[in-house]
Length: 171
Ligand code: FES
Ligand code: FES
Image 1 (cartoon, rainbow, N blue to C red):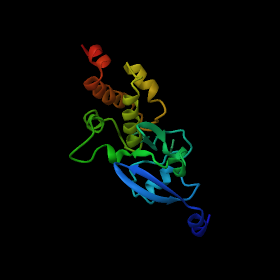
Image 2: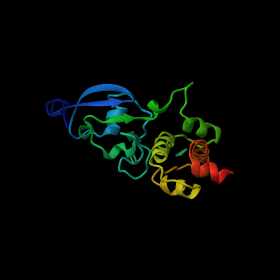
Image 3: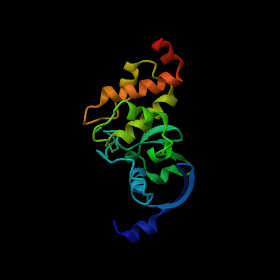
Image 4: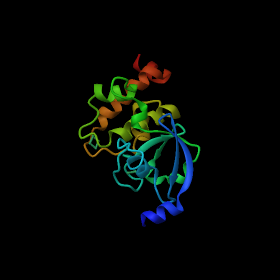
C-alpha cells in the first residue's frame, strides 16, 4: 500500500498512551503493535509471531492484556493503553519489573515486556490463586529461552506481596 493511500484513508482516533493523550490519524490496516513500534517510537513491545501465538506483543488495553498484533489501531478510539514503558521506568520500576530482575526471569529478554504486561493483567484479573494457575494463565506467553520457572517465581513473589491467597499459601 502506498503512503499516499495510507494518508487518504487515515481515520482519526484519540487514545491515552502511557498516561498521555494522543490524537492520531491511522490507516485502517495498521495494528496497534505496528503503531507502537513505528510512529509512537515505543519499541519495548516486541513482535514475535505477528499472528497472536507468542504473546511477545502483549500490552494492556483498559487494564486487560491483549495481543497488540491482533488489534487494529482504528478500533481503539477512546482506549487507555499501557505498554512496558508505561508500567515503570529505570529508577521507578513496577514491582513485577523488579521481581523479574530479582529472580533472573529472562535470558535474551525478547519475551520479557510481554511477560510482564501479561502478568500485570493476570494480577488484575484475580483468577490465579496458585503457582499452577499462574503457569496455566500465563501459557499464552511463550519464552524460547525456557525461563518459565523463574518467571513463575517472579510473579508468585509479587502476588505474595499483594494477594491474600498467596500470603496464606506462603504461611
Ligand atoms: S507478536 Fe503478537 S502474539 Fe506473537
Ligand atoms: S527470555 Fe528469551 S524468549 Fe524469553
